[in-house]
Figure 1 (cartoon, rainbow, N blue to C red):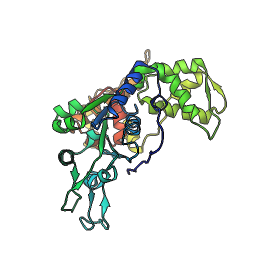
Figure 2: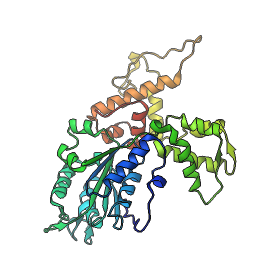
Figure 3: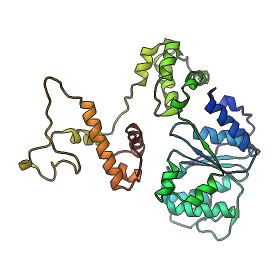
Figure 4: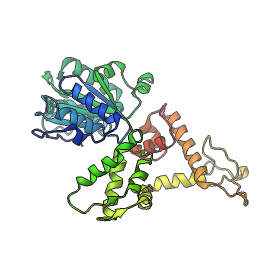
Length: 361
C-alpha cells in the first residue's frame, strides 16, 4: 500500500536528516545540494536498509518542489496486475472492481516528486509503459482515451546490481538512462563505521515516549565493529531493542553482544525444509521418491568422528547455500520464483543471499 506524504512547509537541514561526519556522507550531502535545484531525474543505488528513501525525501524537501507532494511507491510490493492502475490511474468500469475513477500516483505527484522505490523489481512490460510516460510527460489512465499532462520529478531507487540486471535483460537500458540522469551511490553502514556513534545518539535523541538506554564507549566500539548486513535500518532496530530492554540504563559491550544476536522467527515451512535437508539419507535400497535426497545434494552418509565432533552449523549452512544456488539457477535469477521453490518469503531469501554472498544470475 502506498501513501502520499505531505512534508510541505518543513524546513530541512541536511545534516539533521543525513547523519554522519564521514567523507562518504559529506559527499552525499554535497551531491544532493547540487542536484536538488535542478529538474534532473535521480537514481539512488545502495544496499537494503542504507537509507535510499531518506535521500529521496531530502532531495524533494530542499528542492524548488518542496512545497508540492512527495509520493512514494514501492514497485516491488504492488502486484503486477495492479501496478499500472496504481501508477497511471484508471477510469470507472475499466476492469472488474473499478467502481470509481482513480487518480494514479503520477497525477498525485504533479508539481512534486514521485519516488519509485525498488524500480529494479518492476515487470518488463511496465518498464515499457513507464518509459513512454517519461518521454511524453503524460499519462493515460487504464480504460481512458485522453492523455493527462503530468509534471513530476522522478527519484528512483533499487538495491539490485542494476548493470547486472541490464546485462541479463531484466531491466531496460533505455529506461535506466532516463531515470539515471544523476546517479547517487549510497555507502553501506560498514563502509562508514565512524558514523555509528552519531547515528546511535541521533536515534536516542528522537525517542520522547520512554527513557532511553545509554551506550558506554565500549558499547559504541562494539557497534562500530559490527558488519551491519541490514545497514542503518538494522542499527535503528538494535537501538530500539536497547531502549526496551535497558531503559534509563548504561549498557556495555556485553549487552550489545546480546542485542546483536539474531533470533528472528522462522516459518514452519522454513523449519521443515531445513531439517529435511539435514536428515541423513536412507540407504539406496530404501530410497523412494518421497525420501530421496534433493537433486544436486550428495547422499553421503553423515558420520561423526567422536574425537573431533562435527560443526553442525557449518554443515547446515552449506546445505542451505547449495539449495539457494540451485533455486536461483532454476529460476534464471528471478528471486521471487526462487523463493517460492524454497518455501521462503522473498525478503528472507534476499537476506540469506546476502549472508552467503550470492547474487541472482
